[in-house]
Length: 197
Length: 327
Image (cartoon, rainbow over all chains, first blue to last red):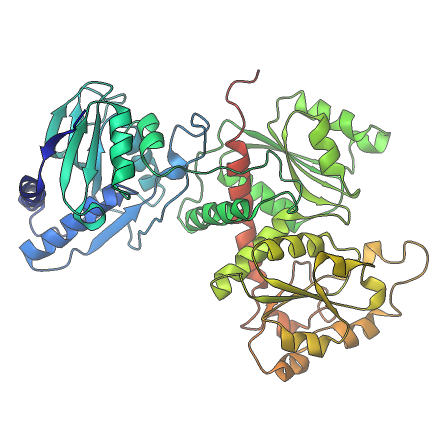
């Protein structure tokens, strides 16, 4: 079945811009704020937001990092193959920062749980907020809620949400696939697709 | 994100082709590269303020050392603890081995206490293979006699990759006691699988017969050999294994040091930046002098540092293959 487009290029850009403005609304000139993208898929969004913030406030965000959560996942040995790690880059002191974790799709909340765990190995932030492009409501398995949301999606178990990026897939869009198989075949057509459930 | 969906949609993650790490010989090139990529992740973890991740918190590891070891044992133990595994240590001295218990009995007794992974060092070649056939646990060979020492070879190649960017096409010289060295054998397999050229150098008495059949070059003149290589791995003279038949393999340590030791003068005569390695423990003044061991081109301490990351990667990848509910 053909996937439903949830966010197309223009709306996608506007959504990212709105998220940036919400961040500025809450944090002013973003002093003391650290933007941290979760590997692998939250990083593209985090980089986009970092660029957009730079354009809006006219200066570089001081603390920006990318966090790999592989070794903190709770599904080690539940999967047929072990997850392979990506790069972590956090070259600033996390202590007393106001951290904004960035991921593309929030679904069960387990990745964010692992992300929080990984994050706290680097220090004790003053606060941690969560920013996601897509929030699949009503599918949480852990009590985790986002602070900034690009779009809410009410979906049922079998459906899959994939996020495609200009950088890797040629265009910005968010698709809703009716089954996992559909999402998989779409992902294999557009290689490098940033895919999430 | 649900784990199932991640597994299905994103690039397939890989796993090792082996259930035990008995030697480098059984590994494929892809296995070695997977271990390196995983070790990259752990190396980053080791630089965090909290150097511990929860991956192996439901795994129990037994370290069985039937032969003395400091570096390897500490390195394995740190790797296990930084992966949150439960660790039991066992060494042959002061144990029931000295009361005449067999290897299988010893290990089965330990396994009866529900151990998932066994890290073993043993003086007999093939001990790890033997164990893997008779007990129900993942076996990691931490050195079996003069046979193999796979994690050492992995960390050596990983250190070369880190220092020179890649291993493929590099010329690696292994100097010294090749005859008694499990490090040499594992290194030859590992380097060749990664596409490096290997030359061995040492006195004829310490060179195994027919070693050229492994596809390595042999040179007895250290100066010539050094001019050929990009990396020189100076093996330790294994005093404890010399002259088993009553006849020493070389006249004296002093003569060995003069012919096959690397001092600063000899190093300067090479005329290029050869990377210096040593698996430890160093006999300073025998294989290398202090000036060479502490030289800017020496990566001896990097080898030790990388050892923990490599062992974490091996433990992680092997443990991933342990079924969750015992059958």
